Length: 60
Figure 1 (tube, rainbow, N blue to C red):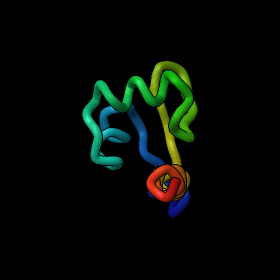
Figure 2 (spheres, rainbow, N blue to C red; figure 1 turned 60 degrees about the vertical axis):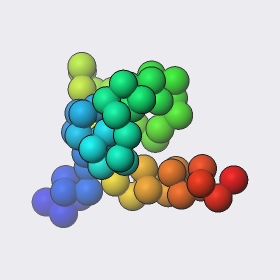
Figure 3 (spheres, rainbow, N blue to C red; figure 1 turned 90 degrees about the vertical axis):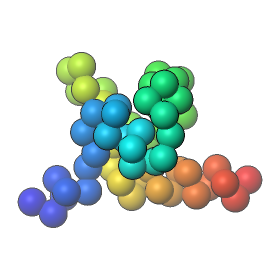
Figure 4 (tube, helix red, strand yellow; figure 1 turned 120 degrees about the horizontal axis):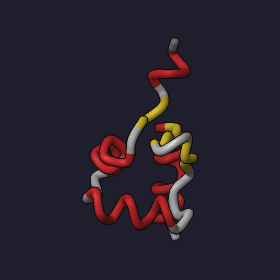
């Protein structure tokens, strides 16, 4: 169950988690700029991978 709590389901939830607008997040997801996967018609991402990707981006 812990692994499931580490996932963020849906682009809107991902946007809230990373502090971006829905539109910005949809763009980043579709451009492959975020470590996420589309399952059916929903995006899913690991919280840890999102944090790592954004922290890496800020450090550059």
